[in-house]
Image (cartoon, rainbow, N blue to C red; front, side, top):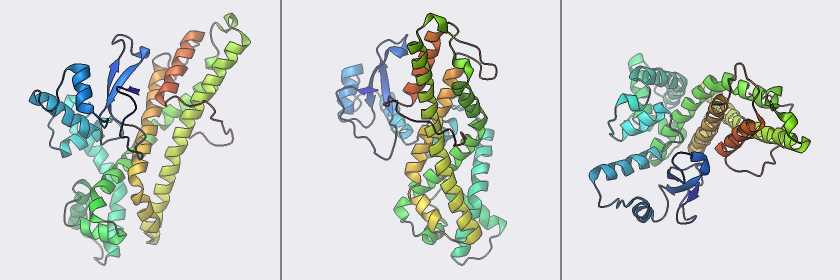
Length: 333
């Protein structure tokens, strides 16, 4: 999206995406494009006033509250209900459950899976510090550190990895986020296989292909291969991060070697954001195709429909140079 007022946006280089207020040219047809005011953009207050007549420092309390919520949302890589609920709740925001489209029970199940994954690492860290085996009550107390890194028990974990106390909150947030995205990745894997099969199969042959030149049909194939490549690259980035995580996990839990896990945790913030961007882009691609045809029983589409769909998928990943290549020997997922 083009920032209003030029490119003066203070982007965080460790984040592949940023939060913005989108202003479409046509509210009835979002495909016409538009402009945006980024939360971190220089002169944000003045731009909000120019675009909407809103003086963020003077206007009504509810406007100021909305801006505060946008700044909180800017702290998570994707708008997954679980992540939104977690970050907003941690900042004291009380919003109706229906906003998140997830129940407390669903959140508890996700939380349990995160705790199950991370608990052995916390237990090993405590043992490394000389506290011996933990009782059930002690394990529960240390698990609370995941959700509140300000607890005294966090110091034992921090000391075992040589992490600065000031980094604890950011690292724990990213660590939980990575574990959450690993769960998400496992759940969307079947859908991604359908996307790969669809984009690489014969279903993209246009129903009215004879009405178009051979060059036109080749261009459609090229666009499909480019989209497939972009999705594949996103999947490969996820797989690489998860592989690194699992190897570090095994080294520490089973071999009592903390070095790889420490290195992984120190880079967890950037991995967290990369995973969020990659996974949400893959999910949006699946949903985009689903708007035109079922991936369970794909039907042939007209040329202009396929072209529109592929252009939308390409926009999800940003406008690249289209020169990505496919490695047919590498497994898709």
